[in-house]
Image (cartoon, rainbow over all chains, first blue to last red; front, side, top):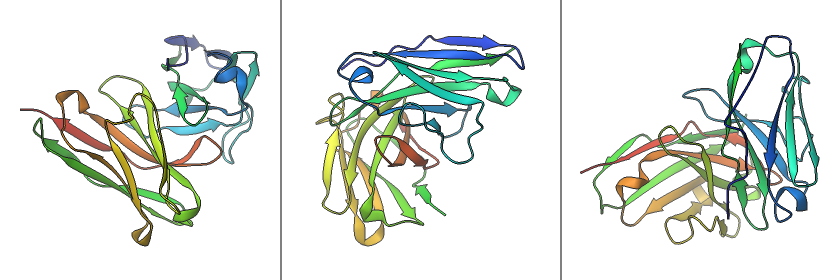
Length: 109
Length: 117
């Protein structure tokens, strides 16, 4: 199985919005509601930011939102803040296992 | 408070065996899937597999099936990841994490495994 496809990098200025895409197939992203997004700061464990396409865990700012259309999921970070600079990974259920995206490094300019 | 505490860093030689652990607390260990994620140096996250401690049902990523073994001891709320013969390419950080509905909601601090002759 192949990893989901994410852009290697994304950037935005403080206060702006940025959207990160995650493209899979009908066997993963397009076929299920189980898409999630993780934030990872250097040297730290990942943290879930979005699950089931668009749900936010308690404590995650509402600046983070998720969506899906067909085989592509998206994470949007609105009102960018310096602490949002991190690596972001999408995942999708793929029928008995989960596949990760390759990751996107988000830079806050 | 849900906590996952992993065993310490390991330095091993190629061909050696290894078992790392992840001790859970703060929730009913048997009632949630728990799994492992690999992160090779400077690389992305890779889903390895999960286990349901109540009945030891396991699911592996095709990429890791046959390469590692995931197990759990529900009597001590601990999950394990083991190798029978390590390779240099197994050098990585390994995270354990509790699984909700096909997403990981709580993570351990990571265990660094270094395999070098």
